[in-house]
Amino acid sequence: MHKISIENLYKIFGPHPEKALRLLEQGKTKDEIMQNTKHGVGVANASFYVDEGEIVVIMGLSGSGKSTLVRCINRLIEPTSGKVFVDNEDVTALSEEELRVFRQKHFGMVFQNFALFPHRTVLQNVEYGLEIQQTEPQERKERGMQAIEQVGLKGWEASYPSQLSGGMQQRVGLARALALDADIMLMDEAFSALDPLIRRDMQDELLMLQEEMQKTIVFISHDLDEALRLGDRIILMKDGVIVQEGTAEEILTSPANDYVVRFVEDVDMSKVLTAESVMVKPAEMAYYKTDGPKSALRKMKTAGISSIFVRKDRQLAGMVTAADAAEALKRGDKTLEHVMTENFDSVAPDTPANELFPLLADNNYPLAVVNEKNKLVGIIIKGSLLAGLAERGVS
Ligand SMILES: Nc1ncnc2c1ncn2[C@@H]1O[C@H](COP(=O)(O)OP(=O)(O)OP(=O)(O)O)[C@@H](O)[C@H]1O
Image (cartoon, rainbow, N blue to C red; front, side, top):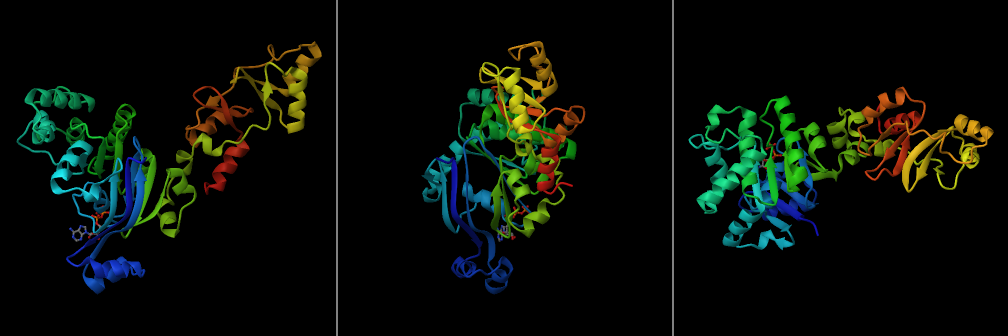
């Protein structure tokens, strides 16, 4: 079950959306519909899902419909047609009163302009949502202080917004949403007003918080770098329509159309692609229990490779080169024990490709890509790294 499911959602702005809907179905563009009916197309036939604990970034240029789409999820904007499900519950079918309760339980929002009350202290701002929910003052304070601590603002609770920097004010905005303990966070250009360095700090902070909180986050951004950093998946919009949905890598390596190509053309792919996406399957593997130097050598010869990784107890234990195995054979060694080296580089699957170059540069052996259980999932050789990058359009 998805945490959030959106099905065929439309938002037409104007009093009589029927004609605009019909024209949309006939394939008319947003501009044509505006000329023809004076109705604005906010979102047209959007369907997507967000899983629990995921960060999905909605990206697109100004006016592409990001805010409208996200506000339709909690019905701050009423969809013209289509369905929104949260935990399988049809949000579009809720009465006003049910919606009010549902919003309190499920949705926290963080805005670009912080939306803080200037005459309230940090703590009072953070407590605001809880006050509306009529939470007891003592509990309000405890949850408020906990959220303030989570965002690193302990000691500032009695200050006023004007005494804080922009980055700190946004932390207050974030704390206010966290204090509500809603399971879904809707973040509308939350970091866009911040200086680039502070913005990056906030992105890191959010990712760190997310490690422990595992909220479901829908994050609007018009900034591709931010989307690539934060998004488990990215949804790209144009003129109210979702033009592509996928992981950063999918969008970068298989853009759905020219619009997406133009959107992503300036991205440094080597920072985005990971070890996993450029690794190859090992041609052969030696097994500590069953392979001595002789069979290891034979495997290397058959596969046309000059070194081989050795597995012991289902884990990656070492590597042997052909020269060392030949020596061992001459000496009469029966096992790989004395020739196997543990001195090779291994990386995690999510290591960015640009961090692999230096490791390969002073190393003639392949890099091992291992998972958290130290199991070999792939290898990277210079050729495969360069080929992998070239294939994906990195020169
Ligand atoms: N209340 C409204 N009445 C009429 N048209 C609207 C309204 N709100 C949004 N629109 C139109 O809907 C379209 C989508 O707007 P929306 O604000 O969702 O885009 P956005 O991608 O979030 O843009 P931005 O990044 O500038 O916030 C735009 O053409 C906009 O003019």
